[in-house]
Length: 142
Image (cartoon, rainbow, N blue to C red; front, side):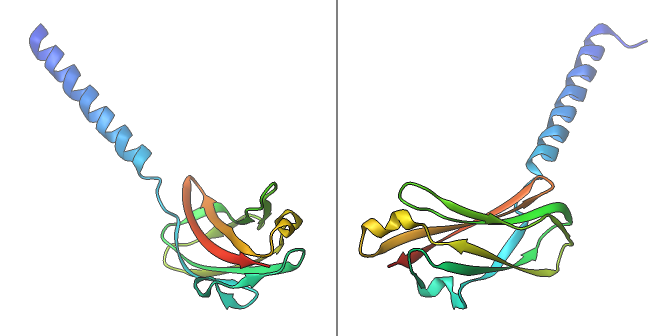
């Protein structure tokens, strides 16, 4: 028969192992992808493309999936002074190790017209199945 002290140690051990298992499960949700290329109207986002207020631009996001995931969406957002403009894909599935490309259209916010030109943030989020990858770029608006 197990003594009371041995029971307490055994229960403590089980709780510790359960906690570690739970922590490992919760922290498993990490990045979904590696963004390999972002283009704004055919210009690489690293080359500081200029966008014109009121124009509609095409943002192409290429990424390599790090995991198998379902209900994945790609969202792009331009941050305006007073209002942000967003576009999002329909959901789709990805498989680990494969390259994907999604194109979205965004209207450059009119609230930026108060300035002659300046920086505007382009935010990208790829998410699904508890995984998420974000990426940010600075564009120039005119």
